[in-house]
Image (cartoon, rainbow, N blue to C red; front, side, top):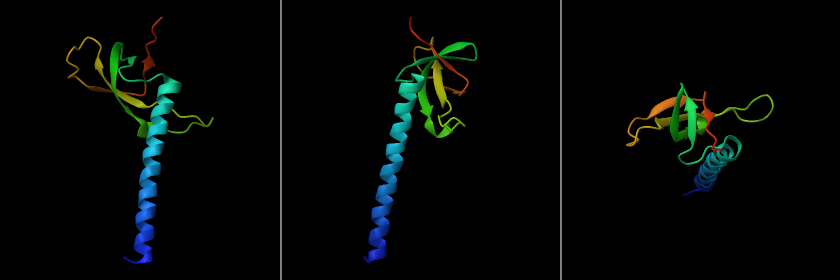
Length: 98
């Protein structure tokens, strides 16, 4: 293995690690800024949904330097099996417990 190949492998490992770190940071941002956690409840399309997945790749920077809300997928609150998964997009509101 020559020097160029060795440097390429090191850089690829560092890029992969940075991408994983960025993904985790975006998930943390969603948790602390938007309140999204495992099994969070949101309202969208006139229904209440349990969040099943968060698409952090859908988040973009705003002019203020913050991120937009992510696109989420969820299952209806009354679906006990959790089999029906629907993409809800980013037009959702967090259900807060009072």
